[in-house]
Amino acid sequence: MSIGDNISRLQASIPAGVELIAVSKFHPAEALLEAYAAGQRSFGESRVLELEQKARELPEDIRWHFIGHLQTNKVRRLVPHVHLIHSIDSLRLLRLVSDEALRIGRRVKVLLQVHVALEETKFGFSPEELLAEITPDTVAGLPGVEIVGVMGMASNVDDDTQRIVSDFRAIADAFRSLQATVFASAPEFSVISMGMSHDWPLAVEQGSNMVRIGTAIFGNREY
Ligand SMILES: *Cc1c(COP(=O)(O)O)cnc(C)c1O
Image (cartoon, rainbow, N blue to C red; front, side, top):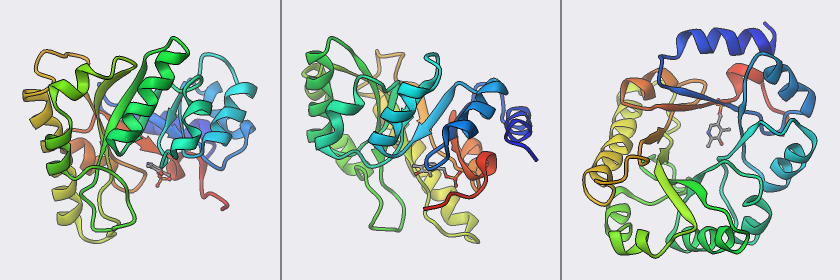
């Protein structure tokens, strides 16, 4: 199957109201152009320099999503190009992005990354940290960012569907807690980014409205 066929097949099976982000990390510009020709406009990258390079080279109407761990020393390079940062994993990073956005006269949309997976190597706020640290005062003090939702990943356990479902449910619960409190009068707080090639149907069942799919579109990555 071609990249274009993969996009069409996914677009046909993903429910209305769920946005498909084509995760194009480590794939060359030509692969992205094939997806673009099939109508795809939202792409996800996990390295700042790669996103920057592709943003310069590829059509201007592409919306670039940053999904990898964001190092503080790369914020300045990312902010001019990015449509949505999925991976805000600390207050310090949130403040840096806000400051940099203000400095260049932008407001940047971001998601708060929630860590519920078994793997310690994954990044993000625990649900408890999220509720303790993201307060109305914090948000009011960060005019350079627009916090539009949360992002998370399930544990990397192929055959433990129960665990995957409970991870997704915990991420969606964290979203709903914030939505009912800090963001109660912020309709833009509406995004739950969860689900990848192997687990997106479970994520959608638990309330995801943004799925990040790489392998099922572009094939395996060469690291
Ligand atoms: C690579 C990556 C994806 C896509 O994973 P696939 O299994 O290739 O669909 C999604 N989200 C994040 C955060 C990633 O790093």
